[in-house]
Image (cartoon, rainbow, N blue to C red; front, side):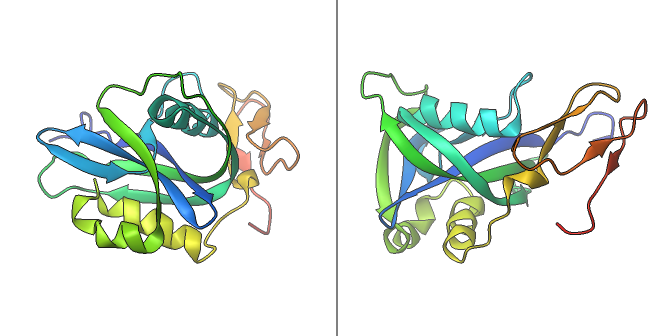
Length: 182
């Protein structure tokens, strides 16, 4: 495969914790029912955070508020010729819309603690499921200000966390100036 045609699948996910339990989905992938965080492809026209909120709502009916970045994960499944680049966000549950239909392929949503999830590791959609929970549980989280959504071709940056802008655009270049401390 040439570099011209290879592109990773960029996905967004939420790690939603409530009282020590994590919001998960059971989804049909081929012939298997697998466990995953609410997650899906980042879509054109949205920020990464907007995508994570959208995917959580579509797959579970839960409205959530993003609270941080758990991590950025790359995964190359051994049987596929493409990779996944996942942006996982921590989020708090706000309200559930029980009338909302679940996304195609999602069988149900449910809550599990980290030990129950570990016991079901053979059913995880990918190693990213367990790694995201472990990183969340060990407080490996980053402030949202590490993400900045830039407008096309040198426009002003639009931080995902408007209270704490991280980067500044250099006029006309589309480049970024990063702070000394991340």
